[in-house]
Each structure stands twice: as C-alpha cells, then as structure tokens.
Image (tube, rainbow, N blue to C red; front, side, top):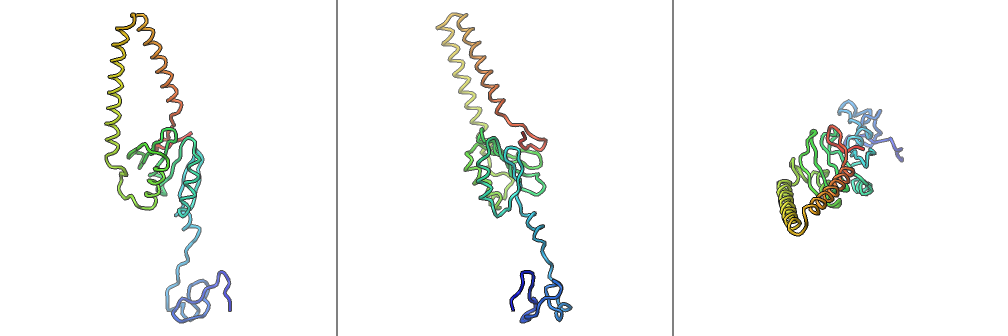
Length: 209
C-alpha cells in the first residue's frame, strides 16, 4: 500500500501500522510513547534566513543559498550589507568605491579593512560558516593600516615643503602666491569630489541612501 505525502507509519520499532492523528505513533503505541513534536517548516526556514541590503534595497535568502547571494552582491554599485544575527546588531558592510569592508556589532565599528570585493566575500563566507569565532577578524591589521596612513601623510608633507622651497627660489613672490592659490582651489575640488562619494549612515552605523 502506497503512502500519501502527509501519511507516516508508526515510529515504534517493527510496527508498520499508520500513525494516529499525526502523533508519530499508531493507536496501539500512542499511550506508550510521547508524541513526536512536529517541526514547523516555515518557522525553521525563517530562522535560518540571511537578511542583506544592496544599495538601500532589503532582501532575504536562505542560508543554504549563500553563493547565490554573493552573485547578487556583486551587482552593488554603492554598498552592500549582510546581517550576521537575527536582531541585526552585528553586520558587515562593504563600500564599493572605497573597496572597504566594515565589521559592526552593537552600533560600534569593531574594525575595517580595505580589500577587493572577492576577498570580502571570502571573509563573509567564513563568518557565516562559523569559521571565524573571534570578535575581531583581522587582528592588529587595522593598527598597521593607521601607521601606514601616518607614514604616507608624512611623506606628502615632506614633498609639499620641498616643492614650496623650490617654488620660492625659482619664482617671484607673486607667481608663488598665484600658484599656491591655484593648488588650494584644486585641493578643494578634490575634497568636494570625495565628499560626494561618501556614504550616509544610520544610528546603528549602517550605510543608507
């Protein structure tokens, strides 16, 4: 006799009788064993879903379809965000133009690191798969990045000082002032352009439109 989709046999050993009223056991064994708890497939599915955001649009996908999610994240033009917990307190987000991945928890930026999107995906998959258990992902790399930034700034200042000295020696004072004014205007234009590409944030630190 074939069984329908919703029919099950009794869970008792060597019993081939049909179960009684979805209790997991037949009428004979229903008093001997505790009823088998029925799992709500919809509730289980929602708990294992991953919520993510691409350029301000929110989506949700099964945790079994991480690779499909990554394909969609590649289409982001400004940023993407992936929640790591149900309460959305912990999340990672990636700024596309800056090539920078951020890790946030409880409205605090734990760390940030510049990397190409492919490397960001590797890090994200490791975190979602439980491969990275520590609060911080990248150790002291952030400190090293800050030191590198200070070094670059120092080099730029040195170059600027040397340039000023050369200009003063080779040009008249009026030419020097005009050149400095032009450089200042170009600098303001560059700063303004950078401001236009910056992303807004919510109170929790998430990128927003």
